[in-house]
Image (cartoon, rainbow, N blue to C red):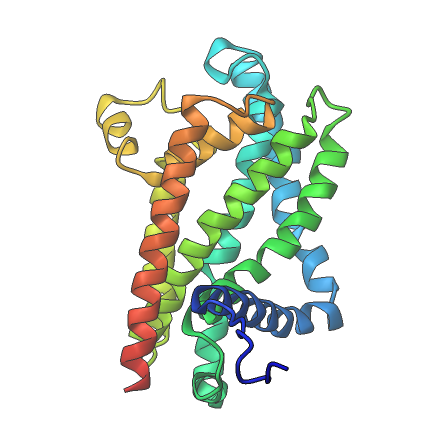
Length: 273
């Protein structure tokens, strides 16, 4: 009769435990960040104002100025709607650090650091929280625009939102690191955020095509990761899932996510010292 000590024991690999822990911690952080949104859904509704205003006022200007030209790939709305979703994600994830500044003032951030939650989960969970309102806003925007010469390709749209989530994790982590760096002068957060976000947006061809712009602007746009993300989103929402444009967009999203997590985790480690 064999004893229990003689029977082999099966242990869970450390990498599997780490993955489960990171996923669990990320869900905990995201749920914590979403709690105020559930209590105040009006904030999500208010967030719909800006993209709908751009669609209602800026879109017709594009139609009147460019029409269904070859520059826009044949359809103004097919070109413009994905850009608006990128804009919503851009503004949402780049302001993740603003919530952190409030927690730094109340001491909530220090209490989070002493919990057993993994450091990456604090960054990923906060950034992914912004994707939930974005998904709800995307449903409304797509429902409103589908009757107006906008062809909805569901698979491409879901892939586009997933790519925005990857990019959002990186940008949100960089915003988190910025808030930690300027926590003693919190007004600097908005100076840096506003100074960087609008040039990045305009130099990505998000609102206007860069093909008709000056040469120097087209050259600078090639070094802007947002350019490749915007182009990839337009391809995905047009149903072109497998293409070089999408590949470059995925690469830009992954690099941004990796850079943001490295910078963000390093910033948290320094703040905890």
